[in-house]
Image (cartoon, rainbow over all chains, first blue to last red; front, side):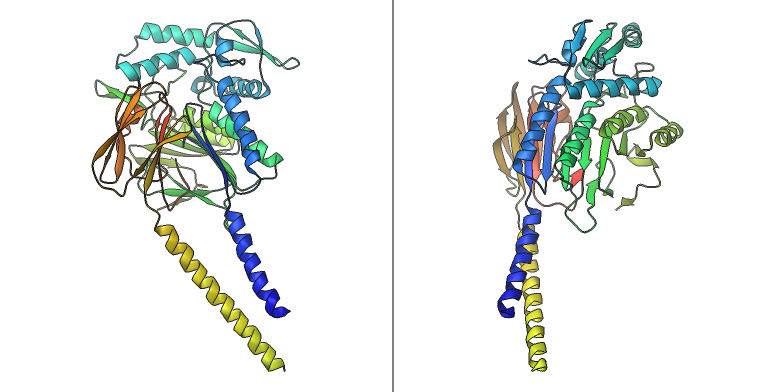
Length: 317
Length: 124
């Protein structure tokens, strides 16, 4: 009996080990990038359900194209009361709160100014100061009113809402809640490398290894965290020897960030995304102050070198 | 009687250990043999699979969502050499030979990713 039992136990162990490695995955276009989802628990249907939710949220946060559902584009096109879906409503509320809390570092109302700078990256023609000042005035005079009972929003002013600096992070928060509800703890969601959600890897320590592309052969290990990265290394244009990027300061309308890249580790993806963008315009002293206020960990890169790293982020080479 | 039982148990344990070591060697050997392949996606669908172990210099024309891109492959590296997109981010990204370092052309919904084995899970 024992002679049969022990080999059987051995085979079962092998099968059990291999089944832990079976992954469910999906890969789709949303938020102007590709979203890659992998789970090592649950079913393919769990991912399909999440994909549907995230694709809808991607349409809702688009401020360039109208769609069959009420979106940011719909809100930007009117000053009337607009009913919106749960996720867009939640994201708008959080973006509005961060616009107020982060004051001059973050604004969701600079959509048309961002479009002007994106045009500059394409044409190489700089906007004049009159245009920038007019856009900033428009943004500062714009706000949203929230009707929590009926889940409707009303825009006052003519500034365009742009959720580009927060939408992918908010999508990670949606994914995190989805996995929690499905009792899935082993997962990774990669939204175009700039917004990443980590659960636990199927290893003894559960840590994922993350390579930092702006630094030579440098890695961090992490689990159960959102990692948001803002960088100018790929989206920029050099005009008259000066490097301009897609990241715009809501304070002065300038598109020349102080930092080359900022990585933020946080519990909330939306917060991490907004902070990594904001920190691109901050000095190290300001970064440390914001880190303490919002309980996040940051790594700042300038000229391919580490300018600042939080003491709790361990780097490997 | 007990000595015989102990000997049989030890024999079984040693056999299991040997089998486990052999299985481990097979798994590790199989992993490193995977060839480097670049997959080109347009709006979620794979439109081209490129073998990067073939060092021949060559071009691939890809029909994206809003126009054409030219992908250039040389010495195991891949890049977008031409694109009709307005911002040219995909072209500016230059050559890539790195797993987990994709090239994205948002305008054309084109995504180029190299598959293989890496010593990290994701790149930021």
